[in-house]
Length: 271
Image 1: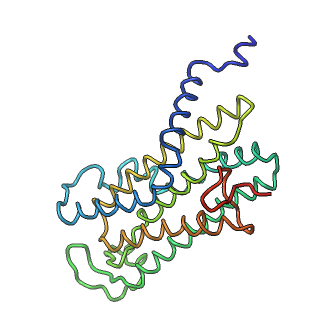
Image 2: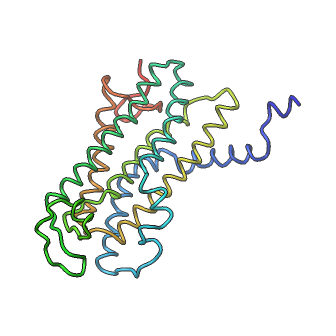
Image 3: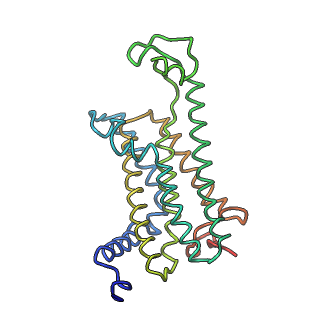
């Protein structure tokens, strides 16, 4: 009986081995440092494919596909849901301080504000620059509707400058996850339930990153004009850069997750 309590079963051993490999080979410093440029390249390559060699319709450019409906459309919700226990556990184990935990969880509040502000701004731009038509085929203007919501509600088609929300949010979520999972490399989890939980969260976050990157590339090859994707991607990367590379290095911020000394000479969980 004691062996069962102290030694994980085969399934948990498999999860631990897989999570360890993911942290070592996927959630590593090299991938984190080059991820932003990699996302830019994906967007440029995908946009080039869309403009020069357009692909035929497929399940992936159907907005009702499973990944889009159940994951991408609520991508911030999934990111928030998985990062919250991850940040809370790594912060507490590293510091034994509830104030440090709440401080680091502030990064999720900041992320929520960035998500909300940018999406509302994108919608305002589309609304301000758009025109209501009878349909996407019959471009007869319906001047009585000057608002996208009213236009669509009354069977119209709204055509405005639609900055890609997917191109904004998916890179932002990806880069935020990559920054936060660094802590798992440096926190020592002494209790078995802590190790099990952090391993499950590591696998969950790895799955999300793969889905976000894949669907970001699908957005690049199937949807939006180049300028709309460029502005969306730039906004997502800028949101990450301003927070994790600038603001979070200052004392009056949520701070960085625990990590080895960076090039800036800063550490997370500073006291």
